[in-house]
Image (tube, rainbow over all chains, first blue to last red; front, side, top):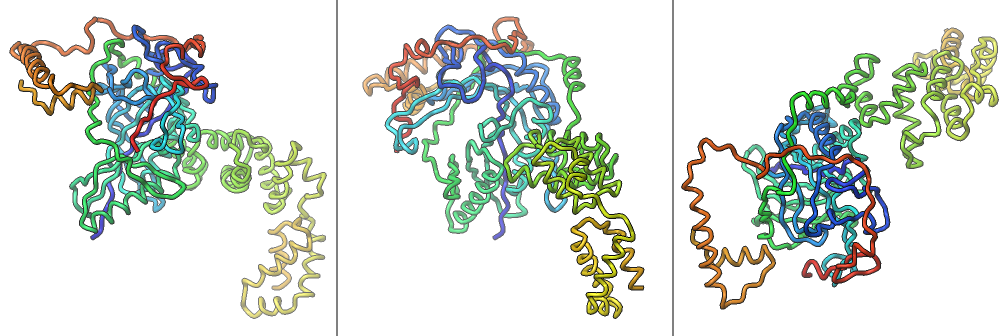
Length: 480
Length: 96
């Protein structure tokens, strides 16, 4: 039988605030353990939490950017459970009146198909602390150590509808959400620091039916690769269970990236009774339509709009515009290259090509690129003017990567100026024709493609400096 | 509302309480009686009453996103039953 998966994601994103959600402790990552704690976030008796205004602002902005309705009346609730990373024995979260509801994002799959993923809700909540186990795993640890620095760091939880049916769709959805959160600058989204992570819910059903199977959940997945791999494995596992006549058990499973498998956590299933109750220590939040509209006006241009602009204004392909606008930093780099006078299509090619290749090789972010957008723009200008060929430009680019000189200076110092002097090129062309009788005969015999081999030889003898268009022209002329 | 022995066990587990066997019958009856009493509320006509989210008529109490000094770590840990080099130390979490 053929199956399809039903996938829903809960994405947790730490917000980029200076202080925690309900107290003035700093949120800085990597601080010495238990130094960013106070009576409020330690849950000592008698303390009074007060909502950080910026958390509300960021949550509303995220909701608007993700096409949500903002609830004018919202409140906090206590989600009760016992776990040592939670000193109060409840997590302050939102239950029936979350700040945002009913949003969506659109994704474009690799086959070009567009799909809308609906967002059920976004709520504000506090993060939990960090456990350091004495053994290798939680199960073989007799004791664990707790660091409460992260307790109370503000989170938004973005809950999707189960609208995704492949691991690819889940990854694209999460990439899109990350990109949007970065555009509106409410989260650092550093996945390696855990400030963007997802709980994956997945079940399977016979293709073409609309029943819902029993789902399993994998918590705290913090890379796009792991999202795709964990779901791929889990879907196959569930298919095997069902094909063998068994039943999928509703449970939480962990993803082991080393072994590429998911494992049952074997927790007691009656534990999921959170006994939500209104948080009496925090008062309701009322947001007026005017305030919501003011937040909406404050949003920057978002990825979809920016992509459309690059397509319309510069004639970039949908794919190129999609890649360039996938991160705000890259989109801004692109704008700066174009502002420095570069042709937009060439700029896109260089950013997606040599620049991205070098950045990836050195594991660098585009904002730290040793080649600044201004210099890349100038270099592309030299290509457009015909001063250098695209091939020579690659050499210039590598030089710019290593030193801060301007592209003009590099071209002059290294003698890389393109030979556009017809006479000089003609000499080389003549020499090549004379010494390549076989290819010449081939060309004259009707194999027009053979000219490529001759162009290649001329370019080689000119050390790449001959203007390729001129070489082509001259060869075609001479071979008649 | 009739509370069963199973309800009692569930509530005890969720609250991390252990109930001595000889008290089970007594607690079950007491919980039933409490819930029956609370149930009087359902006889009140609430058609014209707006739900409330908080007992006080207050909303929008915020603080600015400004860092305040945290507790000294030794002080933060001073009430912890177990500690280990600046960490709160807790007993085994999951049975293997």
